[in-house]
Length: 355
Image (cartoon, rainbow, N blue to C red; front, side):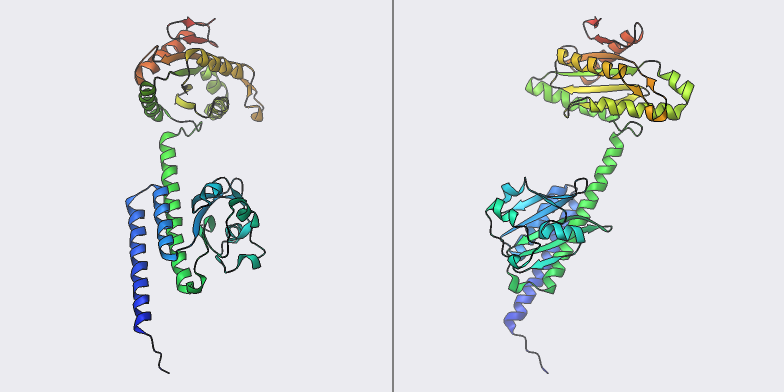
């Protein structure tokens, strides 16, 4: 039997293959030239739209802690509404794909019981068809790419294969970005307490000095040294000492605002950076930290119930210092003023001991 292929069909197929190669080239170029995840994913989603021409399309990422999907990228008239919408893993067609890790092509959503009508009700959008493909990495589903109202009559196995390949690229981009993020976290995080380390302190302070100078803000620094910490190491050993530092770090972070920073400076010394905080407000925080130490029995889970006290120095930009190293020096000197007298107290730059 002879199969006849028209010149028009052959030309169309050739153009399609060239388009696919160009898209693969552009996506590969984005992957190798940038570590910016948002930029890479946007490139991938734009290329998908160029090829498949859906009415609207979106990338939903899995929030593993809540077992929910959220719209990381959404394009179309309903994009703004979708930003605040979350689906449970298993809910709707995208939720089903996230749960089972399998692609779904649904030509008519109203004949599929998995379709979540509430999304259309919220967005005032009319979904007719959905193509959903999972982003998989190491047997985990990272997210789902969803194309709404594509031309289903031209969507076949070749198109599904091409879409799957683009989704693999997206999964690689997400994996790479998360690996880089972990490496960056390791370089700025203290491995004992989980707080930021001294290296990151100076970088953060430099940025805060610049920001505060530009906008006329104040900020304050607390320098904290644990009193008689050496006794813990001498009595209970360094392992217990490390566990105590970790618990202290947890309590410090727990009693700060989201915009505040906690650092382990070294040994049993900690630094707190309080952006947009004047001296009086910084004193409130310092007193709160002293009270936390005074009313907390540490390492109760190890049946130790240790008592911890601290000496705290306070300095404020720009009243006490106008540079990164100078403000640390001022807060450090105030801490030593407490250390060399009463301990378990606070001293403030230009004011001395508070009580």
